[in-house]
Image 1: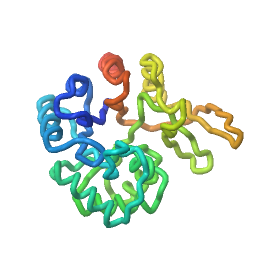
Image 2: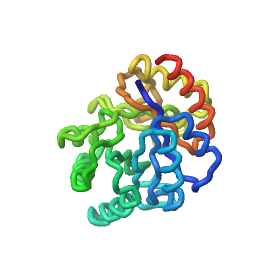
Image 3: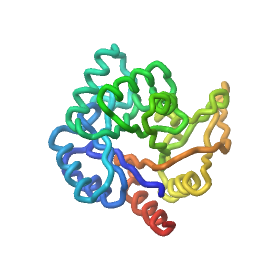
Length: 245
């Protein structure tokens, strides 16, 4: 069964929406201090997730709270791995990870970064990573004998690279990056879940946006907790998934 995952613990230990979201998800990606989160929020959401009996991943990012981890920053390999070490230390026993924001997106398309991250995962004893199924990170993870949990996004749109046959998230700088209507997001997610397809976009040199239908593989669907429709979307999507069991 496809599950709902949520990037959570990014707004403190007691944010009311985050606390309620926990009730409707199957995996909590808990922020570990890189883009958001601290020891108090990590402990609080670990407890809530464990009380619910749901899966947990460590949500790691570029060390950039100022930009919420959504901007690529220039770091040496040593600096990046040191930052990841510090974040993972907050949940060192967790063997599942999901990268966040710009680091997630960069690892989707940058082969060398993907290889670096996989070497780091193996050193840390990480067993599985949540990422797009056709990403460079997914390819390198599988090559190393580790597990990929294939992810899709419920309230984000995709670009498609026809040459590489690869999906990436539309940059948040684009006005069509996010889906802000809950019913539209539910429809988007259910198409992925039921049909294994999504409408992705190609933007030509003149800025014309063309939508095409492409295949997508997903074992889990992500909802961003800071989305304005997050809670309503989680409730509706959880209801549909429960009815289809």
